[in-house]
Image (tube, rainbow, N blue to C red; front, side, top):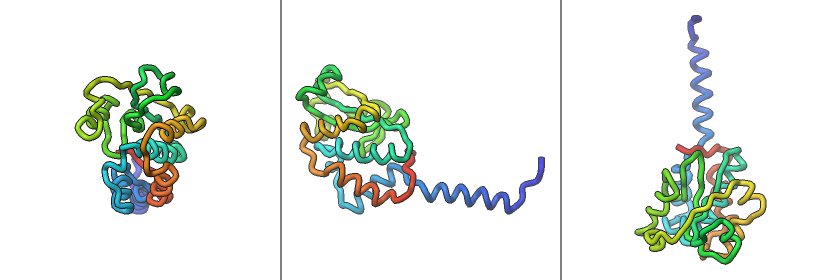
Length: 177
């Protein structure tokens, strides 16, 4: 094996540092959003969960990441989403983990269970289903955002969330750590 020179080590360290500097974790992004725009935890649900998931999901898709959106509703089948339905929560599936702007969860059931004490008495009743929509289903035809606009009490639009997110990300890749 050939000896490694100081110059070679320096190049590797500089490359790792450059990659690190050009990244932001989801946790850092959320904290920066809360600080910069004086957001409260409730700004990530009560209707805004859908607009937030849509905006962050769009940014992640632009960065080449695969993001599905999970819709929790009183519908019993996916077809019920196309009828009038109650939307209880919307969150993202990224790298086989679930994220809603508040926390990372192992399963959709964990995400719903965590909301029981906050805003979701429906969660304990079991009167809900979760449906996963791949990027081509939610981004291309705008189905999910239209559903959010029609069936939730959001007060922060997906456009505003996207502006907030883009102002913080500014050229950095969002990583899920």
